[in-house]
Structure formats: structure tokens, C-alpha cells
Image 1 (tube, rainbow, N blue to C red):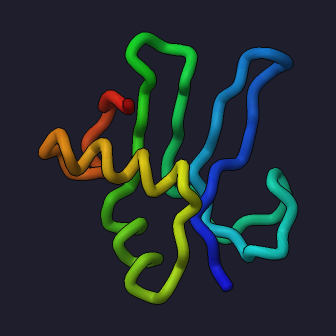
Image 2: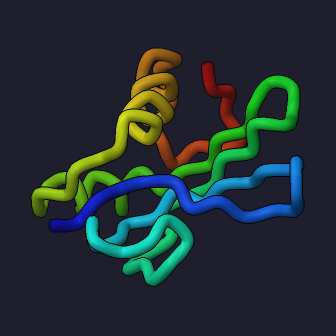
Length: 91
């Protein structure tokens, strides 16, 4: 099954995340199918940059978003901004 989740990048105590489509059995930072966007929690406000058309594609073919990715997508939708618009605020 395909999952939409965060893959952690960045240095120690300086997290930076990529939103990726990956096989649910893969490791957190392991092999992935496609990069769908980024999330930087260290900026004020946190920066979210997502490819809305690709996220819609993966959701349409049955991919399951993680709780955090679902929250990031929802926060952009609540603001009335399409996920492809960047940068946007999260939270």
C-alpha cells in the first residue's frame, strides 16, 4: 500500500521534512516513489510547500496519508489556498 508521509532531512536538532509517497513497508527515510512537497517547522510560521495536483493523484489511486500529512493538507485547505500554492502557513 502507498502512504503519504514525512521523511526527515536536515541536521541534528534542525529538522526539515519532505512529504513523500512511499510504500508503507519502507523505512521512514528510505526508498520513496515521489517527493510531493516540503515542510519546515523551524520558520515562524512553519512553511509548507506542496504539489497539490500530485497529492490529489496519489489520493485518487488509494494512497493513505499519515496523520501529520493529513493535518498539513487540511490546514492549507482551511485557509482556502490550493496545496500547490507556496509558501503557506501550517498550524
